[in-house]
Amino acid sequence: MAINFWKMHGLGNDYVVIDNRDDQVANSQTSAIALKLCERRFGIGADGLLLVLNSDVADARMRIFNADGSEAEMCGNGIRCFAKFCYENSIVKKAQFKVETNAGVKHVWLNVKDDVVISVRVDMGAPIWDRKALPMLGNGPCINEDLQVDEDETYKVTCLSMGNPHCTIFVENANEFPVEYIGPMVENHKDFPNRTNVGFAQVISKTEMKLRVWERGCGETLACGTGTCAAVAAANKLGKVKDKVTVYVPGGVLLVEVGKTMFLSGTAEKVFEGKLF
Picture (tube, rainbow, N blue to C red):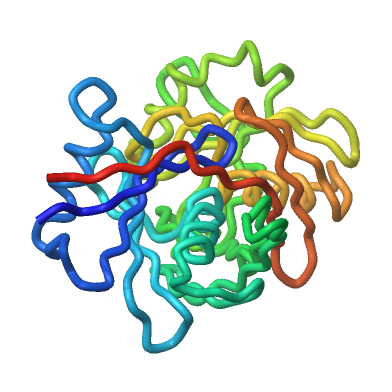
């Protein structure tokens, strides 16, 4: 039986998206299928797989699997793609709706023009600062504390959960920082039992930042929505930025607003559609 899919991306953070409300993809197969589809040489190629499911508590449910087959709790770029997919396929034909995720129910607002979703604003929820929420070894919050990566490398880190774990390191020059070297060492650090996402943030001004993210289970991606929110939350907590911040990621620009919760705004785009046989 053929399975329809869309290839989508949010600022280059790309996904294969499947309407799985009829369970065409069996639960026991999801990890293996994510591995196969996300492989960039022998598959479609993507950072992750998004599945649309029915929900008892929201308008739709999103499950997200990383390129290595592991399941993630939440994804800011992924949920914007998910919202566009649901709207343009008449799964949820509303400009504002709720999405159930493994990190709770999220609210999305769609900017629609000529029945096409141009951009999406997401209530990402409030950051959780306690180490247990990541999880991370130790007690209480981890704000601007030393993390020894190896014998010669120690970095000041600020860690929090945006529904998934994040560790932010502030650097002088994000473009030149060795993300591909330090990223996997922090991701797999013994202090993070379930691994962690790692953000390398450069503060440009009180309203602008530059960010590169090493994502757990993916490697460096062109954009990371939850990572962008985590980096802004950390910078705001440390007094480095104000409440509205434009963040430049390798794939484009995201806008983050800090309040009782974090709001993330950005584009979502369809690349192509196809069928799996």
